[in-house]
Length: 416
Figure 1: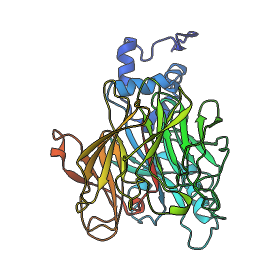
Figure 2: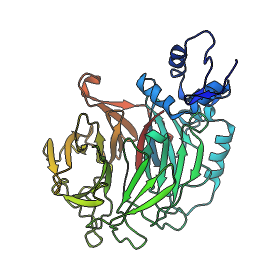
Figure 3: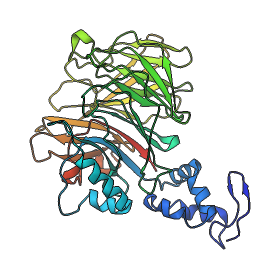
Figure 4: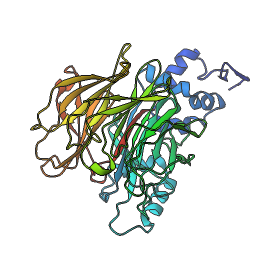
């Protein structure tokens, strides 16, 4: 293939000999993500096109991007039949398998679970575990930055000392080999924290963190923002209240904000606040939003998830997952004290009543729940379409191999 110099962002030339560029691009975006690393070795034109962030946007616009759910969960033994994880690790190669063996053989504190990053490909209905060359912190927050094609693991506890850490791990899906194996350490946070609010800003490459607790279990007011491309942290004004075990969401608007939901103070552990706080990047200040979380005995973590919003909505739409026996309004709307932001909460009833624990979230516009505890549904994932046109709006089981059935601590989703 004759290739000329770069022009308009990529190397000009026939992507596929004999086909117009538009048709050739339509062919390339249809190739499954796991083969992208191999495609980069075909020719310089393909490597240049596939390596650009715009290629992922093309896959999304054509409806060919794959939806991945990334879960930080305790590792459990994998069945010998090679199901789930082993199918996908064959795609990652022997290097990935050797890394996993190295991690599993490392010494650890007795009784302390070993955490890993599991990935469920909702498009292909497959599972695999991403190999990481070092142990990730316990209870780290998982957040995806879609525009950058990256998934970050932030904060948590050191597996040896069980103390909060400042660590940041960055997984680059677009630059990695196939299912994503290129990891790097990002610049650490300015403060060690765990059980904090964390969210990426939609349409940008920034991640907010706020609250959580320090090594003395003191609830934190501090907040900061991370620029993924610059690898820089910027300190933000502190919140009005310390908030441990709070939950974070991105606020949609022209000027994107950050919502910290509920949490509790140092002296009131386990008593979750009914209010929240919203950071406005324009005024560089926080405003309080009252009466947004009506459950003083229930953590918003694993019980709230972002729902899709459309139009000129200024704020965030959330799903609130509740037990079938818990009484609640089906929907409520609250504005903050600045009257600029709004939070809309819609309740979703969880699928079973025999569970003792659950972790719920969202994936590709659908509700998703990992079920723990008693009952025959324990250790499985279930999804529910939020519109009646698909699956009748009913909960359905997802094939969950035993090695991936433990409840996650945090999650994020990304299209690749």
